[in-house]
Length: 345
Image 1 (tube, one colour):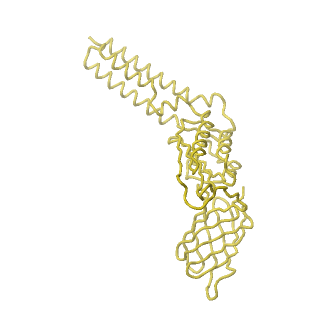
Image 2: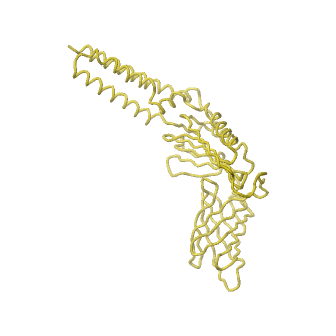
Image 3: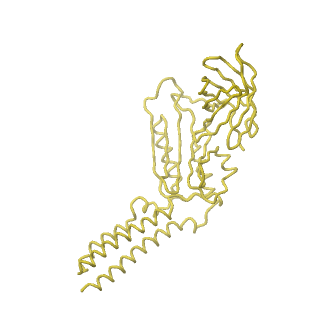
């Protein structure tokens, strides 16, 4: 497991409020360090904390120092790492006090942005690029995380994924060292941020979902970097795109539109009014059914971590299935027309 990070600062809420600073001496699975709390009402308090870092962060704090006349109890802290890289959770003490906390990382020796000037930026830029249907395997995800981290000196990538249960959030290096056991993931998000000019964070998010939207989002104060980063990521991911599936998802597949237009042209060749009605209704049901099958059984993203690299067949099968679906719709429409036209008086 990778390190958690040694320096954290933030706020405490609940029965007591104030600023907190957590300095960890050991920041791997076994944690130890000093927790300093500046209470808005009772002043400063210092705790020695020990605990563990796993799926959650658990710390027990023993009081070491407080303002004269202020009693401190043993402190229990339970937190989780958010998709944005923050620590959030709850705290309580043996005195009956308790509440919530939010801590934010501060890298020791962290490189300061050259343009980290006072004041607000003139403008804040966002660039969102929607991606097509994707097929990602372990090697693709490793490369994608590497592409995301380009231009970031101190930011640590955070991965959030869903393998059929609740969402799980980990640092990217933890995720790659200990990938989920599920054959396929339903959802994957890669997130990284770090301070930029004017004290504003630059942020990159890549979000991939089996039956949702695949998207690259970049935010920052430099327009050229924001646009360039977003387009560079989109270009890097494009080789994992299934073009035909993407067209189907966006436009309902042009061949199906052609079938609908052909239906309008062919209707006059069916003399019976009843057969015309049957033909139109059948084509509508047919196209709707095939669109539904395609949307339900051909995912917008296939995310597989059980294999390092996909075979040629595994990469081409969604496109192959799309062609089969389209060809089946065309054949069924043609056979239906032939039967109804020959049955007309």
